[in-house]
Length: 107
Image (cartoon, rainbow, N blue to C red):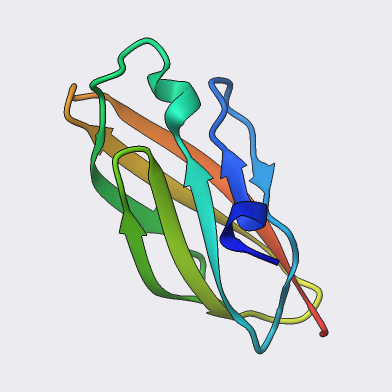
């Protein structure tokens, strides 16, 4: 499974999206593609990113480019679903939030 298969497309409407499951002992990268939010402004890019990560799962690192955000996650309790929220700010001064869930399973 590649990062591309663990990337969701940010939606204009507020709803929680889902990433594929992760194993409790895996450290995996999960992404959000924000390009749909920028359709009306081709020059708009992400300038800052803040991840809200619940207790029980660990954010090891993160990165961004002009239209994508990625977070590396480890740990988590088997059987539990975690909701993470990514808040971005753009060079146009707009702020967007996207919540994504990931379930931890035994692998």
